[in-house]
Amino acid sequence: MEPYIIDGKKISKDIKDELKKKVADYKAKGIEITLAVIQIGDDPASTVYVRNKKKACEYIGINSQSYELPGDTSEEELLELIDKLNNDSAVNGILVQLPVPDYIKPMNVINAISPEKDVDGFSPYSVGCLNLGVKGFLSCTPAGIVELLKRSNIEIDGQHCVIVGRSNIVGKPMASLMLNNNATVTITHSHTKNLKEICKTADILIVGLGQKGFITSEYVKEGAVVIDVGIHRDENNKLSGDVDYDDVAPHCSAITPVPGGVGPMTIAMLMYNCVKSAELTQV
Ligand code: GUN
Image (cartoon, rainbow, N blue to C red; front, side, top):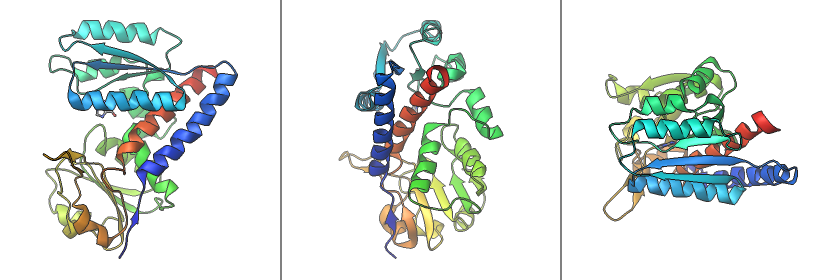
């Protein structure tokens, strides 16, 4: 079977272009949108992510404020900056790139961001809204995956969605979001018994466990939709995911590639949340 390859690059571009148009209309009415991006230290992967986020802001017409703090910044200093940004009405979204250094508690940082500016959707308030199925900022990667499915005309309602991985950033919010979209959801993780058998019952298999090429065709039902959230770089800088693409793809009805699948969607949805934040307070 030739699978339908879900083109995250194209879909994220479509979303960014829709937002660009919206932002231009707001600008014409005098409404500016601003995202504050905070990075502590110079972790190379974080630097790339932050650069891409700022580039996306520029493309869409969102102002980005960049705070590049030294690697020895104290938690107190960071919280002071967040407090200042919370109280700055010109700032619509605040993003602290994770991971933060070991001596800073990520939950203290996430909790410090005002829920109205939590464009990552990581705060307990945002997570609570998602679990309750009420309006709030959605965590960007899971929201991006739902957009990929919907814009590829893949039915979610009534489908059995198996999620591999239970992280706070992907697995758990993904489960809530699929549930809110009327899927039947199973979450699996490193302690799950009979993982292969459970994955084989998935109509939609969403994989984010952080192990390169872990999911082979033995885990996939014929005709399933497979979404790969993993991202791994080999010694030649080649990217691949948690799914063994060449082995799995011939058995799927649709699949996301790595790169060019889920990855570009996270930033598109972050931009979506920034626009939404401005709309909540200014429009
Ligand atoms: N680190 C890895 N992914 C993310 C993300 O989506 N947001 C933030 N703030 N940090 C991250």
